[in-house]
Image (cartoon, rainbow, N blue to C red; front, side, top):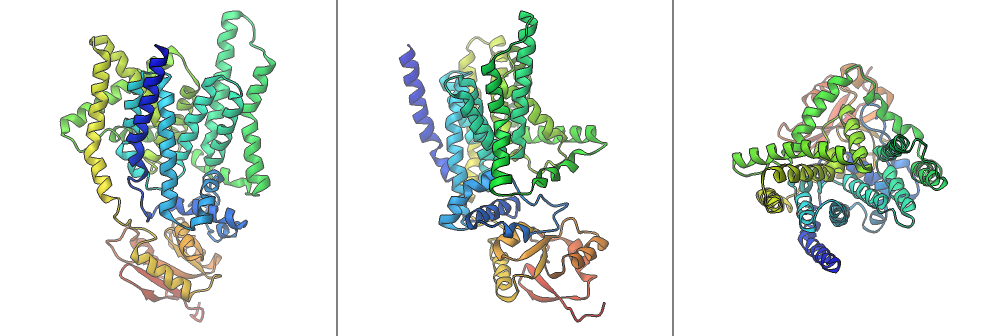
Length: 499
């Protein structure tokens, strides 16, 4: 019986691998959109390769725009590929696709701890082919890698085998290097440890003391922080102030209002991940059932047994609700989306089991409907994969970058809407327009950073068009247009213009 179960598990793993292989190529493009974070990760990868972070400092005036450095972990992964292939969007997106394949495989093992082989298989397919995730794949961002590391840490911790704490420590260390929010996993671990001791004390009237347990706690909670410090501060000498850039987002008197608004936003993101191009009544059925099953699943799972991943889910969602920035959408929800599916399945099995006899058949049918509902959107994504993205590699900006590299000096400073992408494709100093949008701030920025050029989009049909930027430029007579194409115009400062 055990051998039969193992054989079925192995067979489903092979079938799963074949089923998710198309993910390697779905929505993997050679061009990127105008998101700016991706460019910062690539610039850092480039800096790692050339052993100098001077390019990072060519982007300045970032107080309101972004931290000077992103966590180095994802850039460290990209660095070898940058070294071999240069600034190659297709290769970087393929790296994310490979990590997504690994994530799906370990998710199957993770779900197997709670459900049957077939339900675990269907859950992974539901996760892997969710159109929200397929759209996210075209972004050169760290969330897929981060989610892979989280699930790996959960698995290593739950195995309780030889060296499981050392393996968990490795993945937690990687988490911290990839995203700062990885610290939540350490907080979740310490919380679980405290509650375990409280429960043990209530039951046995004594504290659970063990030298081995203390050592393991040190390994998981302290060693990753030491490794993070070693890599960032000692090896790469990254300034320690980058993490504090995020502090200002949490200093607000309206935290309750922020949390409430974010709850509504992420509720929509959650429900939209189940809304597909299907008849309206099917969408209503899927979204309503997903919501009901999720709430029931959370209550039942937490009531039954709180595990490390449950504490992580609570702390991660809490931090997400308090963070006053929701433009990340599904990207921010991805690290806990496997847990959301876990809770939905828990709730579905409990509710269906209460009203029907053939529980498993109905669960299979439910997931089959979800997977089938993906088909139209996935087909649309596949059709759009070869289409060039509007972004820093399109015809219009490529012409601008080519002119700038040929006709300006490396020391010249620019203002542009997307500073990291601008620097990546022009190798010129730049400050962001965002954060300098009032007349006073704009004039101050021009003087403070000795801005020589302004690159602006003047075509109303293009994504980066900003009428406020054009109005501010119009009020600066010393800047005259020296070049343009059908989308962008380059303005140069006339140093002889009277003050």
